[in-house]
Image (cartoon, rainbow, N blue to C red; front, side, top):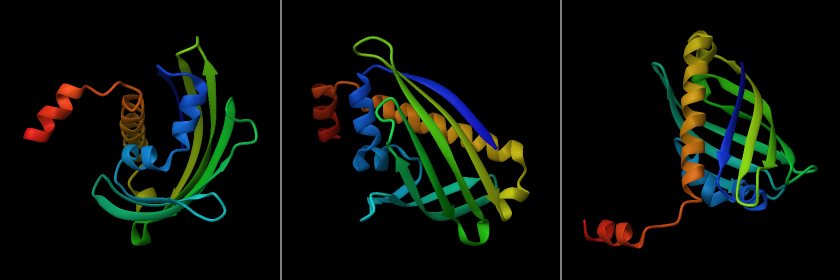
Length: 159
């Protein structure tokens, strides 16, 4: 399965790249993320619970970032195991293009292979779910660049 998307983020490229490497930002934005830590090799280890159609599984996995072309370009590769639900493995090429001093276009092309019960669900359902999860991630990620409203924070504290 292949995925590709472009997202406009209202922030400078260096800041976008820095947040894409911030474990806390990623933990908040990855749908279903329970744990995310950087290991000794610099790779990210994650535990994520996802529901894809009738299959709900807890995946454990590792993601490796190759920053050799950063911040303009970098690649990700990884794999996750969901036990009886199956597995997923793949990679993505990510490009960050400056579109003015305070605007970045994030483009990615990803390829994912799945196996086990996940593969039996059908490519349309899996692709649809992958697109929804991607949209949730990028909506959350873009929100991390919005200024915090002090009034809203005060209201939330009194609720």
